[in-house]
Image 1 (tube, helix red, strand yellow):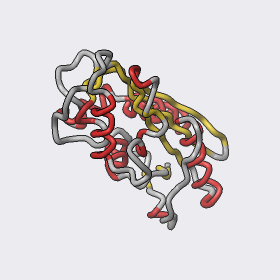
Image 2 (tube, one colour):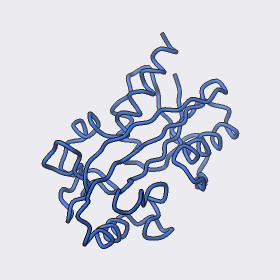
Image 3 (spheres, helix red, strand yellow):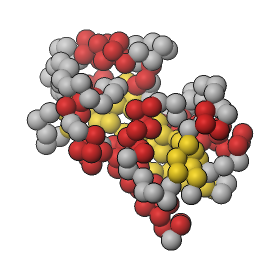
Image 4 (cartoon, rainbow, N blue to C red):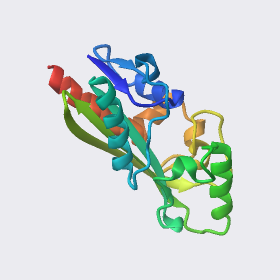
Length: 193
């Protein structure tokens, strides 16, 4: 089955590609001729994921999916949430986003947070949703050089290391995106079976 993943984020593409079986061939929008930025200006993760998937489907009429992920911090009333990629500004600079978050959290004793991923799939014109979450805490500083985004400052519950210190397979086994992608893959396998 050919499937377009509505992202230009190579880190996300790598994470998801390692979780798919051989019956699913993944394409990016640019491989299908869509090189412009895909809009994501909704107020929820689910809304953004669906907006991106519909954008691809309306142009190509091919099966596709999109995700949106947010880091929700209890002490910040759920922020940065849907604005996670743009927390420090529209340029999407993750180093600045992490620095702003660590600054905003410098006096916080409640470090609880969760990552949440919403996936919207459009398969033969029908829309489906999948979601995954992982709870953890915001660390007081960065640790590790793997992963991307907020991974160096997020420690999942039950672990003594950050996401950025984990191998990709270990991270995928417990992560928000990993959980949502496994639901997606299971659904696609049922459809193909």
